Image (cartoon, rainbow, N blue to C red):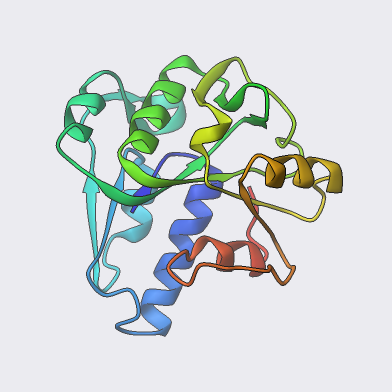
Length: 189
């Protein structure tokens, strides 16, 4: 699994850590690939979790690694899922970030995964930040909160995206996706 930088993915890392300690063996042999130093530290010492830090140039303001060397790493790596914190998510522009280097890094992280999960609270759904991470067609799942307008959820679903809402029973939750538990436990972006 790939975890990009950001508050929502850091909350997911906390939930992964909680599950690993509470339910020994449930997440055994999970490998987490990240460009975030905060996620690396959050998962440090978690039983059964192997954490790999990407290469790249350190971007102090976001405590993560960015730059073109991420592309070289992911040309040789494949992950099942990528969880990305986004600054905007709209059907017209797709997933986006407010910083060009973060957008490029998130694009590389998402491009290495079979499925892309965007983590976006209600203030980000329908919004567009300045730099595209990926087209909306490249997002498979959106995890959001109950403040997201029903019309926005329906638009995403019409585009073929599974929408999971925090605190709600979802029609189809993926048992291999611990991110849904992050939202149900009250952690939000």
